[in-house]
Image 1 (cartoon, rainbow, N blue to C red):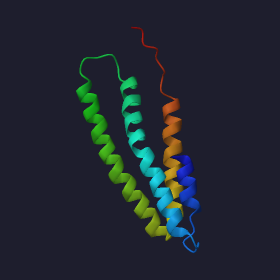
Image 2 (cartoon, helix red, strand yellow):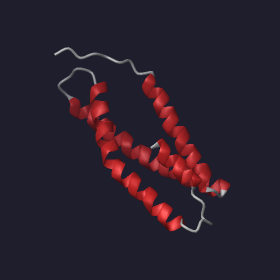
Image 3 (cartoon, rainbow, N blue to C red):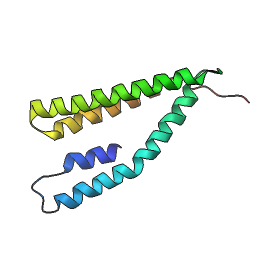
Image 4 (cartoon, helix red, strand yellow):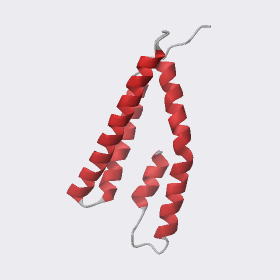
Length: 114
């Protein structure tokens, strides 16, 4: 997603080919969204403790996902309205991705023995 954020940041509304650039970027993002969703669920399942009740954990995952969608959209729009530039909103999204990456690196990795 980092390369897509960088590409979105570089979009220029005065460009002659802005329509082509915008739809190309949207197409590449759309192609990877399904994979990202399945990867996030499988990564989350690997982080769960050994238990029989995975339903509770995935319910928590779904609720936090919905909260993140609402907060992310709000912050994107809020930063855009304050600064009058979507580039700053994209920069904030990049910071969120970086913070998420850093937080994932602090999670203890465990080996499963079958």
